[in-house]
Length: 303
Image (cartoon, rainbow, N blue to C red):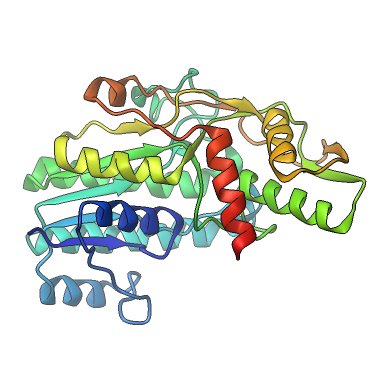
């Protein structure tokens, strides 16, 4: 049986991939941060040397929402560059057969065509609020392509849309919009508040994919896809932040008002992925937004 390493197994994406592999009776190889610092090139090299690994899911990354990206640009650039460089290089060096690199939809230009096709990469300026993270992820894509071109390393790159689900980060200072809203509405309901403040104007449109759907797509593509061409992974439909807030308000059962704070940044006006390449390969998501939000809220409350 293949030995499969999930880098970043405690994170939102990595933990979902571990759960998905378990459905196929595969126990992923994982390494706790205390045992393996992915930012240390010697440690990563030694770990791959000591462990015979066939496949790698590179889900480890420093991630966060608009506020975190804008506040810690050096860390988002440096930490992601270091982690992905160490893992990709050591995986190739020590004979890993296949690697899946997880990018992000923020790699695309701020004003890319909508829905965003894979070939819009590097055709225009990035969204300024997360360009540091985006640039790191673009370097990861190019590293995978370079190692395929020069060494024949079978590394593929997937670009997920906005993710949510079990294991999400609900910290109001550095989480993404969906878990942040879930927490805000839950606390407002618990406290009997009359209103909930929502960042921005409510007009930007976003696409959301449940992380369990992403994990399923990762396993599908690991087993069926081999190309330098990147692949978008998304739902294929988007909603406005206003529509998202109203859905979450309904799921939580909050009865008060929505107040939009237009002094806060909106970010990119619209982010919808063109998922036709993935659909043509034979995969589609299955967890609707409402079903996913209900499940995520239940998990949050259970904690």
